[in-house]
Image 1 (tube, rainbow over the protein chains, first blue to last red):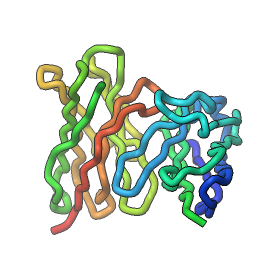
Image 2: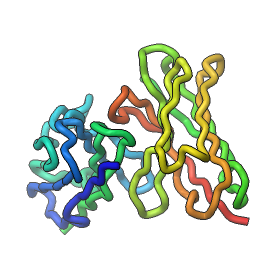
Image 3: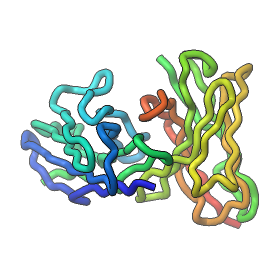
Length: 107
Length: 118
């Protein structure tokens, strides 16, 4: 099973600032990586798939990059509604696995 | 727009079977070539993919749960179901159903909390 490791566990950012979240795979997953946002008490929401393709309706301030074992989710200018937990997920190998999450909190 | 809704008991006794149903609205479960997955999340923890089913009935399970899991589909009711046998406290979690284009999960139900306790 591929282990996905996210860092940092918690990221404190001021509104309007840039946030950079990292996700590392224990072996190459090519570009077969998705990112999700989960707010408290809600289901996750798909943000990015294919490492860099935004899902329908996702604002342009969210961008994904990387391939192989190292991936990044960037939020260019944090809005109040962006404070949440973010998960990466690989779908290159079975079973599909998720990272442990990065919580983005208000600084 | 497709919507998913989980339903089922919120409390299950240890060693018994957890049974949940996901009702799909706004689209047919048997068209579009989609898979339909179950995912769970213990409180304050990360996400675990449980397994999936195709509208035609083919299944794939997480090896860590394979011996205890069964996912089935009822196309006449446009729903799919999860059965997890011999549950323990470790199975206490929020359970989500999700539409699975084959790789990522693009539409999720709101989730249902299942507690395993006597």
